Image (cartoon, rainbow, N blue to C red; front, side, top):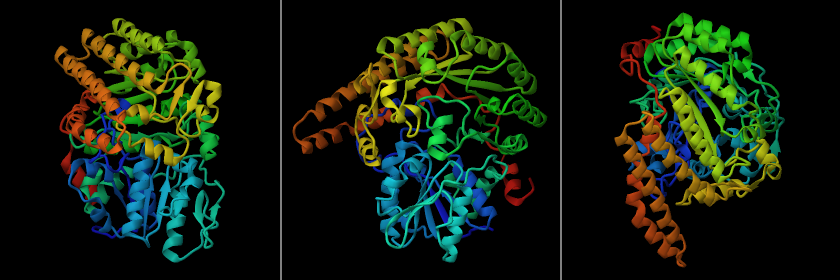
Length: 571
């Protein structure tokens, strides 16, 4: 088992391959997720693919290249890649933020390994599969949200010299160089077949001598939060989300949500609680599966009595019974909900037809039930949203804090940088008052290289230009920072540091605009190089907004003896 040679290496690229050498002013686009603007958090689907393939006799190693590049500024990536010699490489293009990184890492792989096939997959790869086949470094694209079995069949064909014409969800070139698009026919109705992804990851670290790839994001070893997948698909139809009901139907052919059985969700939580005391995030609203599914899952989880902080998502307001049931089942629990805006008309327009009264009732029930923290997320750049509307949302945050106190944690950030391919706004931008600016993979890749995040944004609305979105974002973040300090969510000292960081960022962006206005591109580059150290300094302060989104680690981070038992089969 141990020290095996992988048949497949799954590589997670950084958002921008050259992030260590180019000047980019730190942006708030990743403030509301654990990772940095490098977007080093690899998709949870990687672990399920790895486990499924290994279970079927295909040695599969996951390499978080983005995280390695963050950890080691001197890492020679071409040399590192040249030492990997699997039967095939897989690169994810799940989020469009990785367009440049995925293309460039794929190019490097083909340069150092011209004879090793390269496979792309993910939501964005699915949408742009035809365009991706125009790039010579890409041999295959596997489409859809559940690619474990198509990938297994492709790997078997590559190992045994088989044909590709009967592999579902596959786009490839035939012997004449013509692009072939096999039917998108592998659409599992349930996820019973998904296996033990966390045991796979722990054992693969030893099997492939690669503990570094266990790190999911920049400070994971200090804060090893984990995620448990509950479903694929969504029963809601938010206009801006590619994972929405109509978005996935358009993109992946998925007409209904596929759920993991409650016992598999509980198994994951039980295993995780044996090797770490860090928070466990349940991905997906359990109530999407109906009351019976949610209650059965909670009952099985309660029997485990995990001491970890559990985080539950709400995609829409829930009944009081749900909050009371969670409270009676767990010692440490938290909720997250994303109303996106205080404006009920805008909220309904984007596919979230509930009012503030329902929202506030849910927050009250959650806090009365004893939840440790209730995160409420708002967005900037929505259809129908003006500058005044954004600032009114910030005022609404102040109202919520006054009403519910510091266990409520409101956050706000820009929607973007890109509109998800396949979502309703992407399909019908004019209906929503949106103008799409970037449309091709090449557009997105080029935009990602801009030193100013305004130029990364792939859209603007009738009421907010890209520059407007940037300006009102910093107004909103500065105002909300002061509101949080006033209401005891953060200390005055932290608020002062955060305020300075935001103001310094705005000043640096203005300097970038002055440089971009210079007529000589060579002069522009030289002046941008001079700003690099200041940009890096600001980048080292990006931890501040992320710390507001964390939950306590309930003891020592890792249970090392139990990790050893998992490695040896004792657990």
